[in-house]
Image (cartoon, rainbow over all chains, first blue to last red):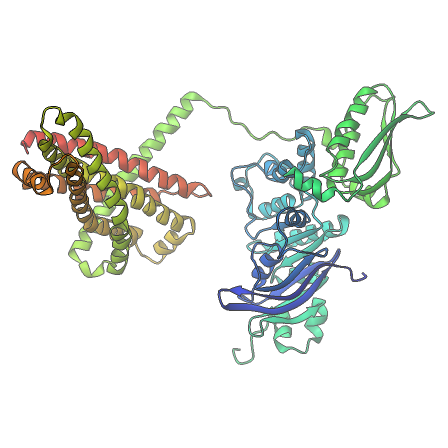
Length: 254
Length: 386
């Protein structure tokens, strides 16, 4: 795949009140790939994701989505960037007082001029894509955790974003459900050509879905590895990176 | 909101629909431009109208002019293809680019004709609902009795073993309940004293009886309004806070964590709060009494009654008995507010709105109970001639 950057992160510095978590990060996400952000606990993976979707303000640097900086954009320009992305939060974050269909319909109601039947059809098709068409009328509390995550993906896709951000999609799921979710991600990436940015540390999932990964490190506050996960596992010259991929404890701790 | 969406799509060629009659006798719908969720509404509507206008003719959709088609565009095509037609008037689609055709092929227009499973509406059976409500009320009463029992036991054991009480939490709660409430209690009591004195002074001046306003203000504030207003403020501030704090802990499974550690949530969370409220409520009531009378005295200055005369009049008619009659309510109100707040917190259900519901229930139940208990006090004082 020719490198065609859809997100470009430059000199990104972020953290909380004087506590810098990451310093001068540079990387880009290519159009159509499944890009995975890795790192140990506390390395700032989720913080980085929240910077990229504009929830947190970085201390410095830029995050360009198709050339537009989400850090400085305001008003309609910011709205236009946000319309290009969809986000699935770790817990699903479905609205508990609405049915699944209403959850998926909400962004359509707010941002398009379509009539009710058309919005229903779109919402229903999104739910069908994630295999939940039979549960349109259910409330989020009535379905399982894995189904909630899939429904959250359907809601994130309501306005056909170019980029989907997933925060720990496999957290709290059993291996089979988690593998099904991986297949869903691959299917959507291939059929709809959506670019995925995924935060996870589920190794099995990483090998299945990731085209490229970056690994964040708490000590150096930067990226210590970037590339194909299988290649990194076998050839990285950083012992910590090799251990991460092989699930080994440090020699002194063993 | 649609303005922002419009601005975004301004650069892209909008979707267009041209209707014409083909030589074969079919009606031809030519779609072109960009089919996406923001620009498609008009075209969608027109396409359905064109179909409805030619019920007996074959419809040919030419999509070769479509440059971009997202999920909403696919949905529109599905919607057009799923319309029920007679056998001699079919709808056919041609010219869609292969990448968009692949998206379309994921869906089956015929299956999409079936209505969505309706959200299961359970019909309300009146008798069943009454029964359910009664059962819930019964359970609620049982829970309250159990809670009173648990709390009494825990308070009793705290009295026997004061060293086991978590005093650090008690002092912290005292600050929240007591010290931080001083400004609002001062404001409300002061205004209450002013309003009471002013409302009474205007008619009493007609009889030259302004001085007796001092007795009215003193008696009503000390016996009734001081304790009651302080309690209502406490219920709104701290009762709601207790319910929300404990409710959030319950939602976060912190209560389960305490239980599995073998720690009793009642001893850990309820006892400390009740002790703090018990310590602070009498002090706040006294403070409220003083500020209220001060408010009354300052008002009467404008009616040419010096503060000294006012206080002397209060002293001559109002007795220590009256002060104590009011102060005796404070500890009971304190236990009531803290207890109800904690109980509602412990009863919190799951979900985003649960904590809000608990806080509301805490305030409503406390205020209702406060008024009821205050009435009982009035009746008992009458019988005892206090």
